[in-house]
Length: 74
Length: 147
Image (cartoon, rainbow over all chains, first blue to last red):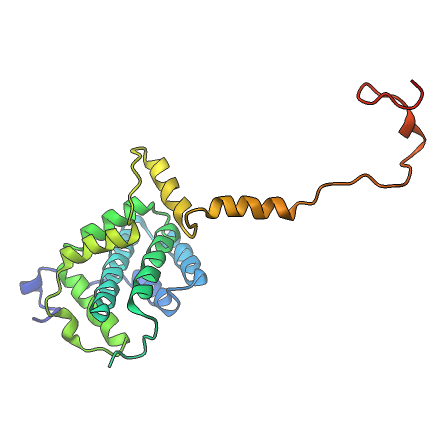
């Protein structure tokens, strides 16, 4: 299944540029306090809608990482 | 082959849960709010699948991760890992306080901290020399030499 197939998934991956930038910066150092501090600052500069999108994406990324970790654990 | 990840999975899961709590704090959310957001995300199969593929690729693994991926179960597992013993209080502020107090503090660590603090503070001792002419003058608290 194509992840970009809107008819099948009924979801899109259209992410605001500002949100994408924040996610990209965070992904560079997501496990560090500095990374989280930068994320907190960047999230405050976003509009409420963008912030909601950012939080939703972060939640999905977190669950995606958990899926991989669980798979590795066996 | 597992790729560049070197730490054992159980440690990695504990680290993941710790990172999640820190992430919630960074986003100015309570743990409860973050858990609800993760629950809601667990219903968005496509987003999680994409994220899982990305995470898998970053670790040098294949796309096999998507096979049998149960996102709802993943959401429940996330809740258990982040909040293994949910506080029994109903007040949301107290609930959050209990959760945050647990971070990095093991059972009995509070008492150990108090003991350590007590040892660090030295008892003040009076100097041997005279501190002035009025030292022997009586006060309401100490009679002094004149009485």
